[in-house]
Amino acid sequence: MRRVISMKAWVDKDGCIACELCTNICPEVFRMGDDDLAEAYVDTVPEEAEDAAREAADSCPVSVIHIEE
Ligand code: F3S
Image 1 (cartoon, rainbow, N blue to C red):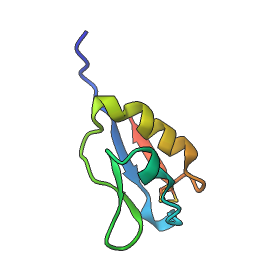
Image 2 (image 1 turned 90 degrees about the vertical axis):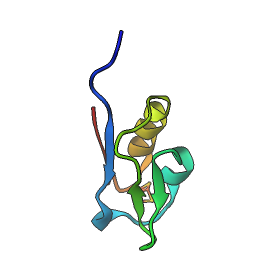
Image 3 (image 1 turned 60 degrees about the vertical axis):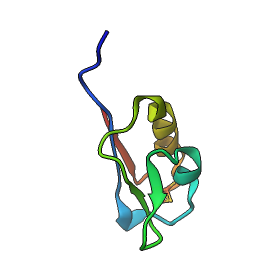
Image 4 (image 1 turned 120 degrees about the horizontal axis):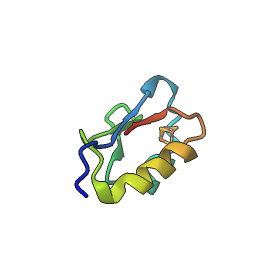
């Protein structure tokens, strides 16, 4: 079945403490930006990275990763 809804992910940078967990768990979506805070650098989470993106959001110690699907 074709999926019509895609997953979005973003980081609320104000709260990021730069622990880099998200970039380790899901480098397909998250990277450390020039400001040394995490950012989601893709518009849409690739399907094969969705589980990792969810895990990153669950693992962020300050819960600043948001997922919308
Ligand atoms: Fe920041 Fe959370 Fe990632 S603290 S580096 S957004 S895991």
